[in-house]
Image (cartoon, rainbow, N blue to C red; front, side):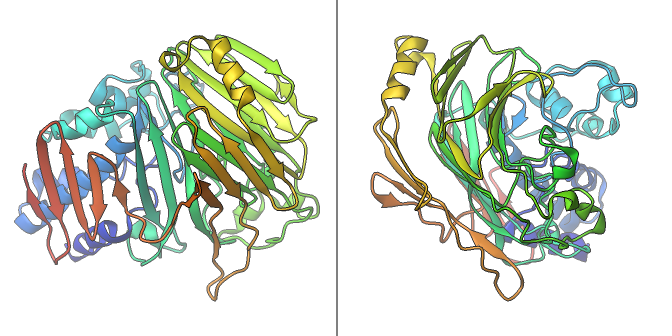
Amino acid sequence: KDRILRRGRGYYRVGNNEQLSSTYGLINVYPFLTLLEYAEDPETRGAAEALVLYHMAMIALNNFDGHVMPPFNRRNAVQQRFGPPDERTGRYMPVHHPSSWLFWGQNEVIPEDFTAAAEPAYPLFFALADWRIPEPLNRIATGAGAPYASRSAHGWFGWSGEGGHWGSNEDLETLRYVWRDEDFAMGGPVAQRIHPEGFFIDFHAFGVTWKSPHRFRSLEVKHPYWRSNDGEDQWRGTHSPFQQIAVHRNTAIVMFDIPEEDPWRGRAGQEHWLDSRDAHYDGLIQLGQARFPNTVDEVIQDGDAYFFREGDVYVGVRVLKPGHSLDETSVEGFNVIKSREAQTGFVFEVAAAREHDSFEAFQETVRANPLEVSWENLEVQYTNSGGDALRFRYDTDYSEDGEGFVWLAPDLRINGERRETGDWPLAESPAISMRDQVLRVEQGGDVFTVDWSGELPRIEGL
């Protein structure tokens, strides 16, 4: 009981590093759900309910049509609507996949997803439980209130059983920003507290996801660092300390500044992590890349710009340096834009068809939007189709603090106003907020709160 209470207070203070893991986000919930249903001690049941509500609120806020929006830690398998049979598991896929099908009718499942999958049991706990997700969270998870932006954060993962994944530290690791439209969503980090020995090998950093009937429906970026020994076409994790990202509404700027040699050679929280990148200590892969599914309806290349359309969603990609190529064969199911430069990057702009007269009109608008790049200052200036002037400057300060942490926070100014990173909330959106150990959910006239600023949580409105 004491451990549960300590963990709960910690989660309400700094979050859970894997609260949005497509693999473990929902696995985190089922033990507390079991306690909620079967524990005899009322304080234990109250703590379990508060922990279930916290995790489900974060998942609802970041669920888009059955996908968890990045950034999040621990992506053991690429998210997909459905997948082909696999000899070992039937179909290995993130636990979030069948769970979002169960909760909200999203994604597609077959019996083998439960009987032959690597981790089949967890969604069954939810199916058999008497507990039901509060209706406001169901509405949020299925898109009520869009479009809107959300800000959120989580603590440090740690190592050797110590760190933010147990809610035992004081510092936030990743500050997050997600833009959610009716037809698409985009998410990326605002700032990160990185440690060379930290757990980022399976971190999913950035993505755009849209509604689609196809197996894959996301755009992602990557510099191959943490798993570079597996080659440049391995996309399990998409994080690199040498790529920095800013997202504002429907627009993202991604910049790479890749050193020749690995400044963190020989440093890892676990020895086998080194086995994933030690072949490139003396020569990091000089490559920035962006991939999108090959099942989209149209793909257009025009100089340093790429455009693709799927259904009523339009995506524009402007490459910051010439000399790039479109690889249509190396990664099954995807087209990959590859820019083989140490310093390179992309600007992405996404729109729904209702915002433009046609796909061609969208292309003309994005091509005409002002774009300036200074490689000397590692700075990008871009004015998007909505008229917002963005100025992005790469954070070149990789100095470590006394504990070995590096705080990377690229400078983003929107119409001249700097995006501040201080006092960042655990969650903030029109419907869900979490500050000072208080979770508040308000949607469609329904309100509930969980206050864990004291020894025990107080739940009101349910």
